[in-house]
Amino acid sequence: MTSPPRSYGFTGRRPAAVEIAFWIAVVVPPLATVLNVAAFVVVKRAVDDVFGTTGGDAQASMVELRDKVNGPLLGLFIFFTVRDLLLSGLWILLGLKMRSGRHWARITLTVFASLWALSSLVALIRGDTQGFTTADIPPFFEFPSSYFVLDYARSALDLLAMAAFIPLVFLRRSNRYFTARAHLPECVF
Image: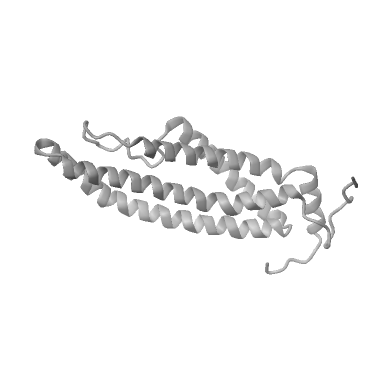
């Protein structure tokens, strides 16, 4: 076994920790967006299914709930999905910059990861990150358990990924890599 080089120069190998952090930055944000979309689809399908099987006073309550899910909540869902896709693109772009050794990208992603980890921790404690259970829901309507599974799984994935990302980019080898790359001219990509 050979010892690692003292510094990572222009032709030096990228540390494995930086590679792993890069893949976290590239994979986790789009995956979280997909899980959010899946959770909304689960709730929408459950509301539509119950709407078709209720009658009487329950039918009136379900009309109101269905109108909320298909109206303002659908609009918010589309807005937040577009926002999440844009943020995923930003994560990927910054991940590419970080992978090429840009210290500023590492710091920016660390700030983003810290905020994301904090919000994921709050989401795991509070539950229902999309706010469906706080709406005025008819008492006979029960959310499908798959919604909560998706919601908690996404929050747990986010928290674990961000908790892994932050130390990976600040390991000794990662620091040496970023320090060695700081003196090189910046390329477009």
